[in-house]
Length: 143
Image (tube, rainbow, N blue to C red):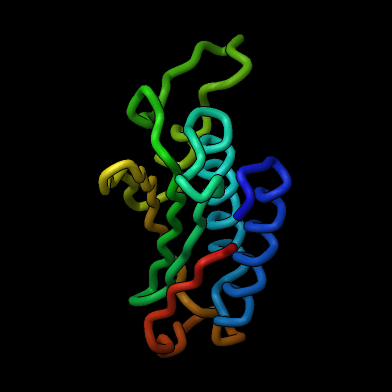
């Protein structure tokens, strides 16, 4: 995706569309969209673009979980959840991710940094009671 603020809305819409198509519960979709928004916004604010001048956003749904990941060209500091004061204007993004996600972390592969988050996201069968069988694991890159 372009290394630009407009990519956040595009990634949110595409993730929402995929998760709806896969039958994921609406509340899980909302959480996943929030997390991808936070991760991508942080990459655009604090990191460098990939060598291509872009940023990569990907997601996968399997085993009742959705993993979202944002890869960029790295930054001078390691991504970590902050503990801002009540009057701070920012610094809450990864704290929100930490709260909403089952787990999150950072992977480094050479010059590429990937921040990922794993969220519970079962399918809605319609009655809200029993998860549907999962499709084959899916990985989508948004770009």
